[in-house]
Length: 379
Image (cartoon, rainbow, N blue to C red):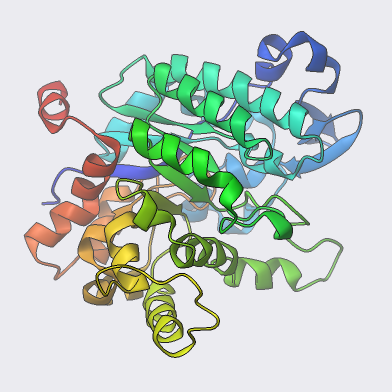
């Protein structure tokens, strides 16, 4: 029997009219929308910029029933109602054996690509308002993660403070910013300080790179598969930039979640960070106090959200059991829904019960302040 299960990485699916009805009036004619093109629904922004189809972010269960049907193509009427209806969302959680969830966007992941930072910030504000209302249906079980644009740091601090007032439980920033504005730059200090002061964990979620195409384009290209297989590269760079520049030493209560990148890449990173710090003084310019190593800051400040990384579980003593959080990815095509209990039980087979409890839900409860007493009472 599994301990209490919490998903550190689940998603909502934004209703098609969200931005038309909620975005600031000045941006309404450029707001995101869904349009049907050649039988499938596409996410479009500005006048005619197609960002993505919706099939991969809306098709939970297909991997078990008909995996050959999974593609970017999809239609809104086939989206799980629980993606945009909080009451149905809670029913789907009960069906899946998940007591509480941390909620990320679906379509919203792609809006970090936008060239206009003001439009991006307006989209994020509208989303944050809607998500806060979604989570108020059951705030003990639903923990929303705000979207934050860091192109203007002071504006980002203001939106982070507003998200905290909305009772959102954390904030996601791009997994990888523009190359000349990586996270080792001093301009971000007010934002790190605000997140630490507000006890708002920050997240780097997959598919949120600020620049370039996230995946390959064109027919018969391997770049799509190659970029998926190596996708931990960019968040690893961001984690290193923050650690090596001393962000966590200056902000000792700051937490960073690396979400939907699995686990097994982390041990090698921990080893190479420490080696670089010890042996390449000219490359690791910032020197830590009290003989701390980069891996120490990782273990004290970074948590990894995984879905089905059995190899990572075997490496848990190197990664740190306290640094691992499971997530279902509901309602996306890769999701473990509606078989999360079985899949998680298989992955954790043979793991001691106290460690299972941390990985399945305890670490998520700690990071996002779930009240376990309220969850048990509501069951």
